[in-house]
Image 1: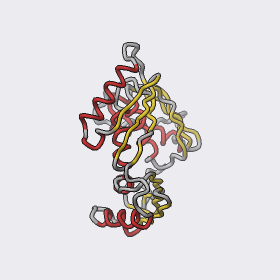
Image 2: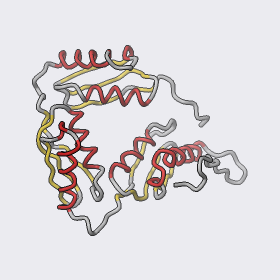
Image 3: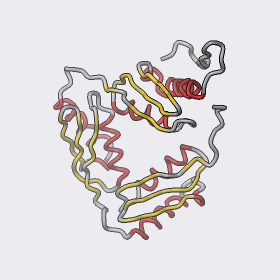
Image 4: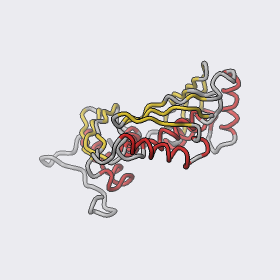
Length: 239
């Protein structure tokens, strides 16, 4: 965690020149990482050239690596991200230890992940079994990603509701779920093909965009969601 408390990092000025757009992007990324990840961001390095961001360094668990990526991709001016952050390894943690902890989390955290199992090989978790919705699969992946030593998670979970609903029914069920949510869903377009959903249109915030995806993933019959929704107004960071 930064020792500056609530003080914002000052933009770097080289040779008394106004910082470049890339330098401002890096500065803002570091502020956001420190604010949202605190001590977990201490060993993350950031470089940016022409809007292409490269992250390296080390974090304790895969969840933190994914969270850092989510933070960066929401920042205006970032065109692409290469996430080379590595997961800290502890020689005392074996695949068997990780496997037991993953399975314990799956079976004790939520009733919706009770039918999911896991195998671990060299730090890579392979999730297997059954779940009712795509949202449940992602919940299982999030749980596994939070286990120390896990380097990656592979989703081989079967969705029980796959193929049981027509695409039109899935689309209508998504619309119904949106109408019961706080989302201003009138500008969201849904396209469904063989259970795969493509969302497009605009919403006010990144949080709304994530919520729209979460709601769609929770609909039975959905096997994949591609979220192409954009923020209605991009925040002006004076980049």
